[in-house]
Length: 429
Image (cartoon, rainbow, N blue to C red; front, side):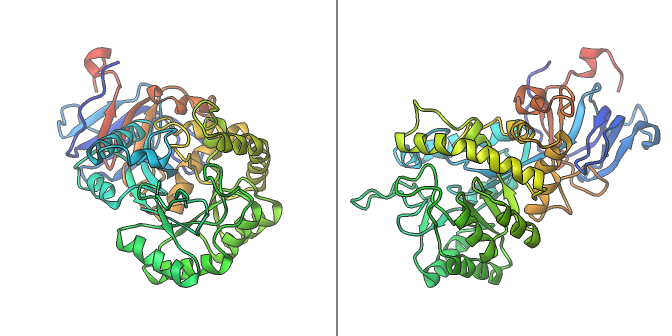
């Protein structure tokens, strides 16, 4: 294998051949498949080699990528990350670093996330809109970004991490609002600062010192005010941190777009979410890979242990129920750069491997309002794709190891390439 290449900054037409194609729609995989991409970064063909458009061997305008029988899939999404924070480090620790170091460390995490196969990510607290612009403008390489900028919480709620003397340890992550008028103002502030969506705390949480997951967060009428204010400003979606069931119900009744975590989901909540088209982002990585007694505050560790079994039971029920599940990891609580391990956790709780892949691709694109552009390898979509060693339908865990993600194409540009060259294999394009 060769080392990862320097990221390209310009597009050329691409032809990926000799691939096992999983297109993200849920359709059966296609053996010996071809994917063609034009110089504008749009997919022009994805299907069997037998019906693929021909290409002349001496056509230097087309870059040929030989998948060598490996699996080609759509670029994946992670709909719940915190890229501004290091794994296992409380938000307040960020304030101890020079802002330049914070920026550089964040850029490194963006690159790690892209190299793991995540071509689009939704950051749900702590990441300024400037990073979205930096990626979109080519200043840095990383997943295309949607960011909530800050998290709206009530005083003493999940995102209120002030010390008793008033010292704010949130490092720019929190937006405190009490009452419906304050909630509307909070929405206006985060949107003014460039947020693509709004995040609220409908319950307490694991990592917050003053509350528990079963505690309710913003009142239903406050959540409803947030949703209405977001609607008034371009129809921005609203994501709700919601762990205990009472707060989950408040969030759904309040009109949110997605339930984040959803650890306490019961059948009533699942019915209501299904009726209203609400997405569920389970973040199972926080349970499977986010518990470490040595690095966590004792209150945090005890809550995680107490809730881990309940979480698995309820998310397994949600999977069986057919909830509209989108992939998210809460990376920072768990490690960055291994995002697609989340797929294995979904499968462990009963999801079919193909359904898990759809949850990480097409369903995520639907949640982010990008399904007309991304999420599937179909004609007319933007060319985000990954090539992985192994067959994830036989072993979904292969996607969780970034070493198996041997090629990443984003917007038609090759961002990571560990594939053998034609010279290495002796094979002509």
